[in-house]
Length: 72
Image (cartoon, rainbow, N blue to C red):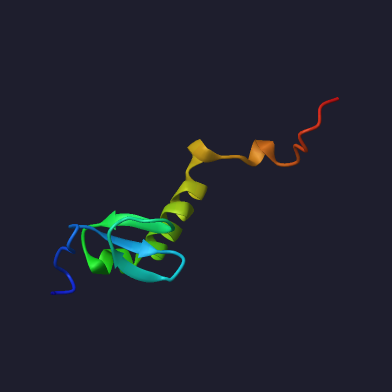
């Protein structure tokens, strides 16, 4: 099978437990991705998205820093 062609399920996943690309959904898997290559770079995609969210002013949690959860 061509490494870029569709898997049997038509989707590729990145297994976070084994750090491998797999065919089909399951526990500990990120996806689906349209290609094996996209699935292989899943952790980079996650890091990029996390970085973007941290820099998004709509998700600024700084005002909550120092809040210990206790009142009074």
